[in-house]
Image (cartoon, rainbow, N blue to C red):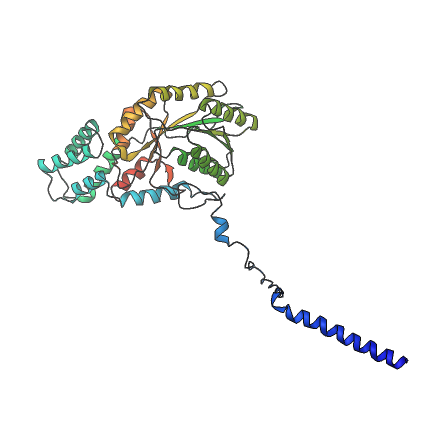
Length: 382
């Protein structure tokens, strides 16, 4: 009897097992596939589902102008930048450079040659007065030998051009205040001249010299301007003070200078909104910004940024800005092959203030102190 019970239990177990197996087989197509064994990436390699580095870079802030991020590295030394800018100027198709080269290339200088040379100088925005002075001096000094001795003629031309550009002007950047006050630099000009980029490049140079700098984003008309300036500030390691969009520019400038005093920084650079020189209300507002700043600390430098390609129109702009905010120095940007080099002499004569900085491109180091001899050597192809 016991044996029958044992046999019955075994049969029952086999029957149940077969039923379960049948059910599993019948549902096999509905079961999810077994997970694959995870692949562990090799050291230094991203997993397949991680975003690529290129995707991450796209989201990082960038400088709106220039060839790439500048990091916190130091700019080229000033002599290197000057030499590079001189080479670029020498290789340009500047009308003034061409006129000087043509004069030196002729075998005999006659009245027709001088007339052509004079026309070239005037068309290069040198101005009638400076052109007359230069031609008179050259005709007097070259009356005997002409250009029979090219080396001597070139030396004479170089001397007279340098005298015209005036190396005696004080081109020092006044970026240091007196006592506990920081130096305060206002950067002004019309739209599109490169003011914000100039502020960023100037801050980069000052930081490399070991100075402490704070930036003030007083261009509140364009949110992009404040963003651009802040990006420059982050890249060179300085703080940027900004306000809400459409905030009072004078208020932002005041706050920036106050923060600079509290933080004991050496220089505060104020970026102002680009404005047409013909808009009286906007120009009055610029004067207000300067007056409000000077309730806290004197403005030690007012830099007017001019696009060298605008020629005579740039001179009109310069005169009106100078009347409103007492410009102390000129920054000439875009002084490349499309510009007319005579603008340097003209703007200095018009305003009685020197060109202090010069830019020949969009690179982060394409801003250098202006040097009369280097400029003339560039024009002469030295």
